[in-house]
Amino acid sequence: DRHGLMKVLWVGALAVAGGFIWAAQSGSIWTFGLAHGLLGLLGGASTFAPLLADTSLWWNRRRGIAVAICASGNYVAGALWPPLVQHGIETIGWRPTYTVMGVVCGLGMLALSGLMRQRPPQAPPVSVSAAGTAPVADHSRPFGLSPTQAQWLLCVAGVSCCVAMSMPQVHIVAYCTDLGLGAAQGAQMLSLMMGLGIVSRLVSGWVSDHIGGLHTLLLGALLQGVALLLFLPFDGLVPLYVVSGMFGLFQGGIVPSYALIVREYFSPAQAGARMGTVLMATLLGMALGGWLSGAIFDWTGSYRAAFLNGLAWNLVNVGIVGFLVFRVRRSLR
Image (cartoon, rainbow, N blue to C red; front, side, top):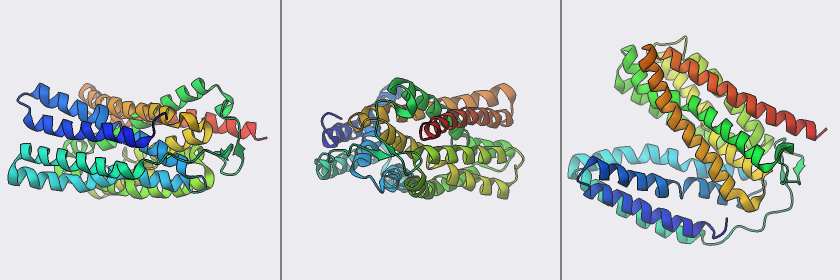
C-alpha cells in the first residue's frame, strides 16, 4: 500500500532464495524447519496477497478474471514443480535440488519484479458492487458496517470456509488408505482436485465479473457444501474420483472471491493490508482444518465425523456471507 509491489517482491525473492539454500545446508530438523518458516513467513507471504491486491487495482471491468488468473499461479506451480523436484532428488540428491530451486526461484522473482515497478493508476471514485451493477460509492461503511466489523466477519468466514476446504485436500490420501483403496489413488484424486481448481478459479473469475465477488463467494460456499455432503454416502473408487473432481471445480474460486470483495467494498488505498489480513485468515483456516480433521479421526476412528465437522464449518461460512448479501440488497432498496 505504501511502497508498491516491486520492493515487496524483492523481499520475497531474497527469502525464497535464502530459505531454500539454508534448508539445503541444514544439519538438523530444527534448522530445516526454520528455513521453511522463512520460506513461508516472508517468501510465500510476499507474493500471493500482494499480487492479488496489486492486480485488483489495475482492472475494473474485468477485475474478476484478472485476479483469478493471478491466483491460479500457485495451482500451476503445484502441478509443475513436484515432478521436477522428484526428478532432481532422484538424480542429484535433495540438497543440490533445494539449492537449484533457491537460485532459480530467487533470481526469477527478482527479474520478474522489475516488470512490476509501475504503481497502479489512481482508483476511480466508485466501483462495482456485489450485485454486479450498482455502484459502491461509500467505502467507509462496507455492507453498512464499520470497516473493522466488516473485516472481522470476512476473517471468520475465511477461517470457516477453509476449515471445511482443508478436509478433502489434506486428508484425501489418508481417507483412501483408510478405505483400503490405496494411497496412490488418493494422490491421484488430490491431483484431480488441484487441476480442476485452476478451471474453477478461472470460471469463478468470469462469474464474478457478472455477479460480483460476494455473490460468487456465496455460490462457491454452497457448492462446496454439496461436494462435502456427497463424500458421506459414497466410498467406492469411481464415485470418489467423481466427487473429488466436483470438489475441485466448486472450491477453487472461493479464496480469490475474498480478494474481490475487499477490493469492491473497502478503500482501494487499504487494499494490500485488508486483503492480506483476510487471506491470512483463510490460511489459518486451512491450518486449523487440517489438524482438526486428523484429531477428530483419532478421537472417533472414522473420517465420517471429520466430514460432518467440515460441513458444520461450511454452514457458518454460508451464514456469514448470506448475512452480508442480505445487508447489501437491503441497502439497495
